[in-house]
Length: 160
Length: 102
Image (cartoon, rainbow over all chains, first blue to last red):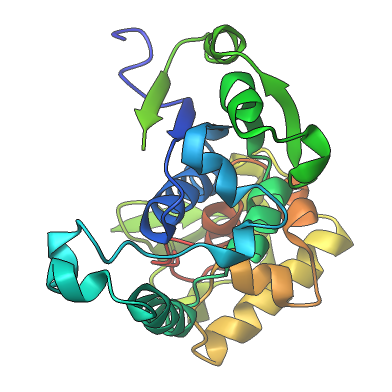
């Protein structure tokens, strides 16, 4: 730490959630790291796999239930269509601020040199195959492999 | 702040970005590129010219825009300006550092 003055060299970002707001948070952090010249790798586990599953990644939603910051009463948030409506509104706002959709964002991350890994345990649990995943995902690996990937000075790890 | 680049005294901010584009010229770009360990090729210049045009048109720059520019794709942009390409390229181009998160 003292030798490199705490400089961040590599960000290891674990995405375990499939709600749009969490997926974007992870993507922005990974892309932002690359923009600063910091290496970035992502490990997709549990519901985070939805964001790299070819058939599912275009259908992610924001969470309207159990999310007090949405300021939608929990009962209303659970009504049919509310989540879809909130998602549409959010996507419109995101486009306004030049935020790409999930598919385009994955392409940006991939082109920017973000390395992507899928969690073996979660893949087995959801019965997903490597072919189901976005092409930029390098491999399906174990948590141990991911820790090995993280070796080196100035690596920081983030769980979302 | 002032800094002498390529024998000329120019105004820069604390991060070394030129604060007055009118003071920029190609020899300054070459020296700023050398500081970033980049030797400017015609391909670099195409990108720098594009960035300067966008700046003059007051278009905010982002990695996404670069990718859609038709001038360079994101992968090549990272190859041309390794490590923080948008920050490095704008500095060499003599324009402000983009405030974009994407």
